[in-house]
Image 1 (cartoon, rainbow, N blue to C red):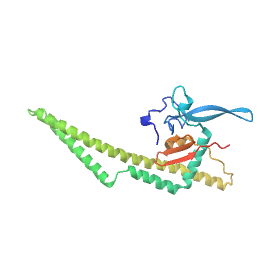
Image 2: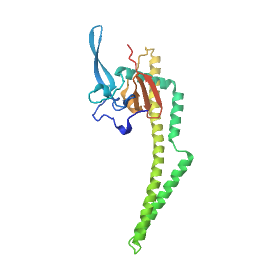
Image 3: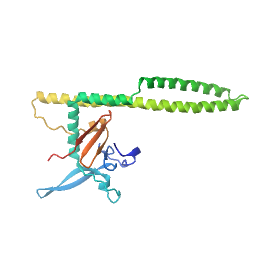
Image 4: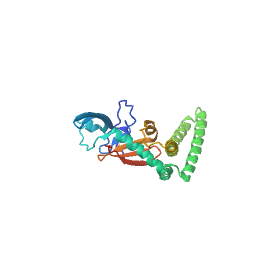
Length: 246
């Protein structure tokens, strides 16, 4: 699970990368930030882009003994596209897992009946409040005021329960919508690959598609062994190792 309560560690500067404020360190909970780094190959210096825990990037500012390692951006992109291909190949398992999560968030038949009952009770209380308010100018104003205050209190309790149920119902609906979005992208992969097979073209590694990542990924973590755990907006969770292909 992400250790980022209430967005406590979210970066407050603008960054257009799709990984920003989405990926967090699984070791300490801080954001994973983008770095421009250098290395050498055959005696020649070269630059590359990586993502690293913020505490390792600014050790003087963040006094934490984090064991995180940096991960190549190209490895993140490549392995994410491979993950999408795996999801496409295992679509039946994807649907089963997603539906299970959606059902867990959705309301049970009893809870749906309870929500309807709450809605009716809240409506009835509103009508009572309106009626008492119209009569509150009489000589019994103090009595009416006490009754109105009691109804407001009762209304707040019922409304809080209703809102909690409705939030769960809406979360389930949102997950269903995001599942449809993910399936739509996976289907587009199938159409493109079918076209390539017909043309007898050599299958190349698919280019990273930032828009897909933005649309389907909720959040993710990277641990010290470069294991990336992705939580999709449709509720499923998948992992991969972001090792660079040399």
